Length: 237
Image 1 (cartoon, helix red, strand yellow):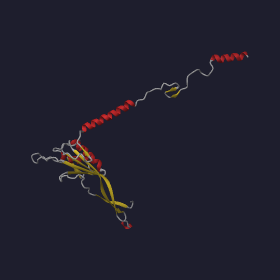
Image 2 (cartoon, helix red, strand yellow):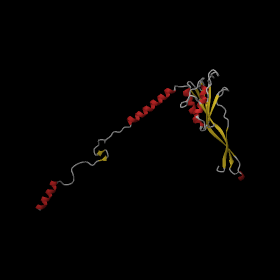
Image 3 (cartoon, one colour):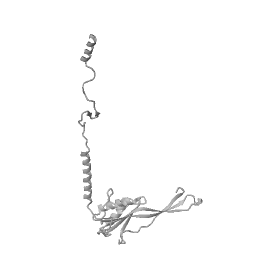
Image 4 (cartoon, rainbow, N blue to C red):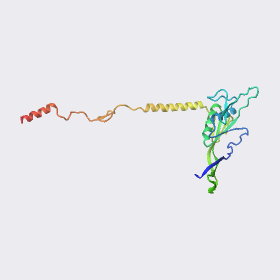
């Protein structure tokens, strides 16, 4: 492919794997370059009556588009009635956007309690068109079909069919995290107490802390008395 350059990429539309959804169900398409902050602001504005400000932001929410930041003015309650929150919302992500879609879903479930979840994993088709670098060389354009992983997540306030694969019932996240932290603390404590080693030697004879030790006994060299005795005997001879 050194003689070609990618001209364009076309993602084929994927049918919704959740039959029976209403036409007004909100869909959040997560891309690789999408910002999680903007995705959460949009989703929370649809799922909550009065969306809370995201952490790390000021009192007024901000929207970022085209590299510019504009402040969103809040309308008084007397001018426009409060809109009822949506009952369902769908998150979709393809390729590198799958991990961001999962992150958004988990944050939404912690912010909005009592949501039922239905997950579908599938593949999406992407068409890549490659054009030759030198048209005069007689090379034709190429069309490559690639299958990339995709995820569809449905969050609903209403109960869903629990018999279908991919269903997750609303749970207590605080208890789940508390149980995980206790298990981690128990594993760390067991490693601290069980990982200690006894200091010093094993008490065996002829072995020390640094290795085998020669046994201590009488020196092989003759003492003073022995050398003197040998000299006296030699003189007598």
